[in-house]
Every structure is written in C-alpha cells, then in structure tokens.
Length: 248
Image 1 (cartoon, one colour):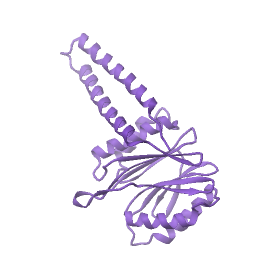
Image 2 (spheres, helix red, strand yellow; image 1 turned 90 degrees about the vertical axis):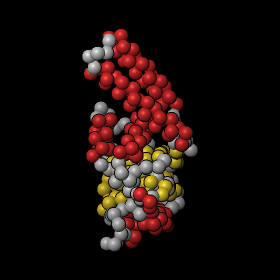
Image 3 (cartoon, rainbow, N blue to C red; image 1 turned 180 degrees about the vertical axis):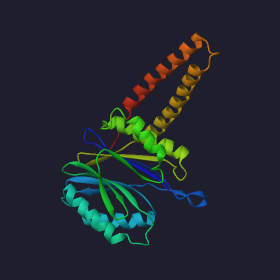
Image 4 (cartoon, helix red, strand yellow; image 1 turned 180 degrees about the horizontal axis):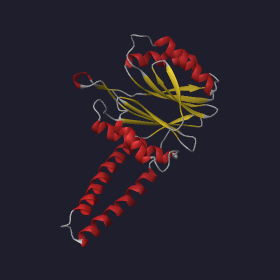
C-alpha cells in the first residue's frame, strides 16, 4: 500500500514523490521508497509500489546493469526491461515503478509488473492511485499541464498530503527527490512539514470563505473581513513557498 507521483517539468527537472508506509494495520512499517542509481553521465531515480523484498532484488539487479555506465535513455529502458524479466514471475505480487532517467535528456517510465510505458507529463503508482488523486491532478494542473519545477513541487506534495489523509494504506513521511543535470536534490523534511501545515491552514481559510459565501446571516462587514484575511493568507503562503527549494 503506497502512493508514488512522478512529474516531468517544463524546466527539465524530474520530480519524484512517495510516502513511506508499507503494509496496513498491525503489519505496517515505514521505509523510504525512492532509490537512486548513478550513471557515468547522469542519474536514474525511481519509486515503487509493491513488496519491499521484491524492490530490494530489483534495485540490486538494476544497479548491476546500469550503475556508472554511459547509457542513453533507450539503453536504460532496455536494461530496466531485462531487470523486470529476470526478477518478476507469475508468483510475484503486483509491482509498479515510476522511473526517472536524467541522461542525455529527461525521461520517465511507468512499469506495471513487466510492462513498461512512457510518461509524458505526470503519473501515479500504488494504492493511492485512486479517483482522489486523479481528480486533484485534473483540478490543479488544468491550467498548466506542463508545470515548472516549483509548481510541480506544490502539486506533488499536496496530492500526497491528501492521499495520506483519505486513502487507506498511505501514510508516514513524504519524500521528494528532484533529478537535474545529472544530480539528485531533496526537499528537506522541515520544508515539507511547513508546506503540509500551510496546506492545512489554506483549507481552513477556504472553508471560512465558503461559509461566508453561503450564510445569509453573515454581515457584509464580516464577509469583507473574511475575504481580506484569506487574501492576506494567500500572499503569506506565496512568499513562503518561494523560499522552499530542493537541496543537494
């Protein structure tokens, strides 16, 4: 049980997002689900949904095939296919990956068991790949389906925060990794906490505006104050989000 999100950004960044929960009920534990493998000129990062033991084997096999090698995107995809063919079998539980390749050009692939398909903008894997996250992606990226890195970062963190609240089997901390120019960058945990707190405050403020819009008993003065408070909150959020950056 998990959720993973991958986004190809307009400014050549590849962003990967994942929760840390594995399993449910008494059998759940928390573990990082984003892995990195260095090429001689570039880097590959991926997140997965499935059994952690299967992922350990995939990571070992995939690493043997591509680590420190000089490979194109097509060659990395070929070795990924060989890895899946070697590791997965009919008895293996469903296993998915979102694989970002920062080689001669940014590219992303989604796998389901042994099948590999290209990702052109963004995609999801895991139990969190539900109607909720599909709805949020359509709503949040409707005006700009090809987002810049900063927009994509907000989109991914918000989608995961909602999945962790409302989708059974998703939870724990969020990891955010960006691939750019052959290097990997991460969003510090403190920045993630601030973003998630800001999203919670935003939802509360938006709820207050909705109440002000729909209750006839609210005076014009109170309505104006509520809308003004919401506008000031949006400005504060905008300024804080501008300062949040991925770091090496």
